[in-house]
Length: 272
Image (tube, rainbow, N blue to C red; front, side, top):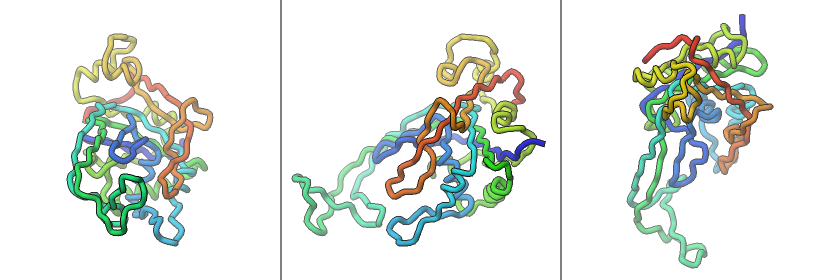
């Protein structure tokens, strides 16, 4: 018997996993972030966002989950990152429900009650089209109580679940299973069934072991016959700004991770 591991399948027409999203530019990373996945679990469990205008201490459960869990993600189908250009017209509303006030040309505070005139706001929002990811979560203490809690919440979510943004609806249930058939998180990412690309040409590209012909998939995600996975590792070579630390400015802490190549030669696979 191995270690308890929670497996999630994140698949859908559109996904968006912001890394440096600010104001009118909303980017996406090439794969789901740890903070986004834990936030999604929080939505399933019914945890409210912190209200920084309140004097009450915010719920720190998401931070506790972040520290208690090891996170890994495998890119089964990388998809294509596309940018959606928007224009929004009219007056802008603030988070407190009030209309945004106008800034004076001098930079000084505007007269009290002066409302910003209607204008057009441009926004750029990135999405990953037709991607599939395998997410694996493991408790650092080797237990499974927290994983079973997540599985129950995902089976009966308190609020609707999305793949990063409300426009990104999953095409299948997020929960795969909680299993003890793998010895470690790396073992799960290397051996769990692969959700392969639908197009035959892409599938052949992955399975063409040893080939070095150029391909837009292989160019970004490694040579043919290989998937890419990322696993949380304190001694890893890469740094990700997606460790949850609740604060009013929505700044995140850093965590280290390691790239894990996954050969497709011996992987079981299925086409959704």
